[in-house]
Length: 389
Ligand SMILES: Nc1ncnc2c1ncn2[C@@H]1O[C@H](COP(=O)(O)OP(=O)(O)OP(=O)(O)O)[C@@H](O)[C@H]1O
Ligand SMILES: [Mg+2]
Image 1 (spheres, rainbow, N blue to C red):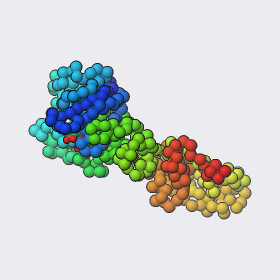
Image 2: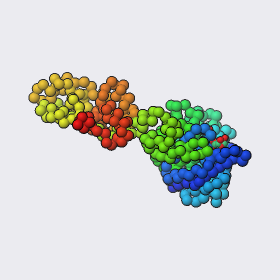
Image 3: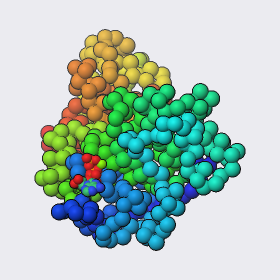
Image 4: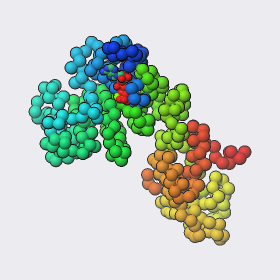
């Protein structure tokens, strides 16, 4: 990956920042304070006109604050020369987009050129970034923006913002104009990319689902840049700080929370795991001890074969039949929302959960998920046995 993540990420702090546009009756931003730790994605989300773009443009000094201070790595940006500051801050915007009369390669090279890099270094950087964003350099480098799809243009915009390896990235609705399917793909690609480069990123969206997905932390802004809540996505969904936030997050916030939890995060039921030929007495004892009415038959490698019916326990040893299929088989890495829809689609109350090797590690049930929903603290979900006491 070469130099991509070479420059360390910066911290960003807004300290009592205000912005009143000349002649405006009210301030676009009033006394906004916000700290973004290095290497995190901070999402600004809020209704149209609440000051999100204004906040971004204050950070790279495209506009000047009328009050307060902004610190990049602890140092006031107001002491910096604006043009030089902007070269250290990647800025990706859907609306402005790429320079139409420059090729993809020239677009990406914009800031490195301004920084006076030599040709070989710029060429290598362009190549490296095109590969990073999943576009074939040989095919794409010399095209013009009009010859790309919207999603490809978007990716080139991100590559351009990354070109000089800036310690801070500002992204204003970067995926705003993209259809839902490609948007999701870009979001995933971007999160994967961020896993490698670990930039400090301020990301603006008006879409709460995107905010929850992309943000390490989410700042919900109200009119006038008023900070209604600054929290992790989980905290935002679990404990909205005000009726405004609650309303903004949406009535289905409990379901949204399921998209943040993985199967591995919650206490699964113990599975009564049996193998063919095992003494039936053992199998019965396992069922006694378990939350489930039937034993789960597994193969030599512990992979699930099916739920055994009573008749399979009629002899001295466990028989392979009769049994019903143990579908769906769930993965430890599944998000709870997907696991739940899998269970519902198979019209079943529970499914075995397997690890990366395919071996059964436990059983997930609709009941466990509903307790996770209600309690909001998945680590302490009681088993049905405990509930009955
Ligand atoms: N150049 C300007 N002159 C005067 N007022 C402005 C200017 N730019 C923005 N504003 C006002 O400042 C407020 C905040 O605008 P801003 O563009 O920051 O909102 P936003 O949160 O980015 O909205 P959106 O989601 O629609 O992009 C709005 O009331 C807007 O009308
Ligand atoms: Mg805006």
